[in-house]
Length: 495
Image 1: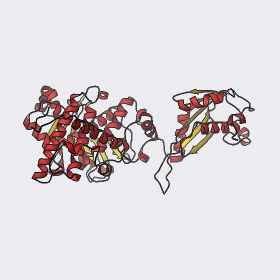
Image 2: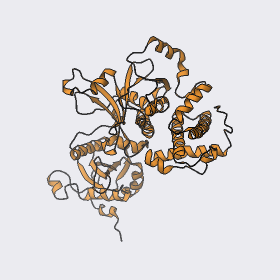
Image 3: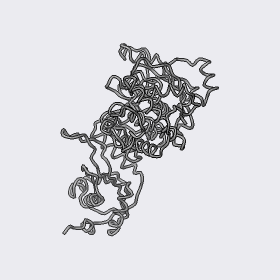
Image 4: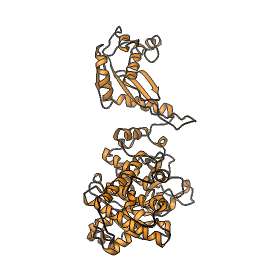
């Protein structure tokens, strides 16, 4: 017969103390040789008034409510240093607290009735600052470095902004614009379009560091990539970046926030780090809120700009200038991208921005569509899909059908962000169908039968559950569109 843990503490003296308790991922990594690194779980029990640690316990699996109860009972019966040594050193003797605060509502619901049987009140408290401070000390002790704060600690960085940063970074990683853009070709960025310019480099064509960096001037880029040693440079240079890396490179605060807010992730090597580098320092910092907004806005629109406007995989990128509308978190702002980059905007450019406004928007589907523009967009969209004239004809017909499908999605009022995801997925569907399908003539029926080429998607794009589900969702929408009999005909007109 299993002994009730509550029975073990009924006889203990009850104090007026309030205890704090948490059960969460530990602020350190376990790195076994035979499997991937992982974060264990830690249960930490602390006295509120004295801030003394009553007990700590780590384990690989997420502790159940019964396991947490056992740990609390152990903390009451045997404080951290044991029942004999603890009183001698002033760490308290076995006792029951009057109240326990936990930062997990589910644990409170499970434990409160049990603890009330021995006169202990158990309540929920969303944030326990003393526990957080104790865990930061634990992190510093284990990792031998100062804890790296998360993005939500940046003054002015809201949950909405950081959420958009993670979402934009996931989309950026899935598109992988470095496949088509050399990392030494700067793109001019103005946010908003009338503001001063910064200059973006897409990172990844070298196969080492993947992401994006923003610089204050073209001269800064030249100096950073020059052969002049850092200690011999005549001025300090700073830039800020998105770097895609493994989870072990992330701050623990950001990893915890990803779990709490269910932020997306494109793959195990696509954890997004926002960092600011200064040429005179070897250590990265965190961008401020304004820099984070700049970085987030740029990361959001660069994939579309590279994929549909530049595409240097078949020759030098063509000059392009586009104004994009940004998601609501940016307060209705717009952002201008231009290639090749210029140091100054000419008066003609400024007048064009003022007068054209909406005609320079993000997608060709958001401006009046003319036949020559359709042709240009279509050829850009299918550029990688064919190798000869017969395959070109097949690619054109399939591309036109996918364009009509995307027009239909846009007509029902989906958000620009969702439309961009479906556009990216449609490009992959077309690419996979041309590369791995066995059809010589196009028919919408090739999209029936459920999501295809999942193996190719996982191998070449991303094996993350979020990315695969997004790709499959687009395919299922496309299949329903085919089944509805929509977009019949092939006259090249977009609705």
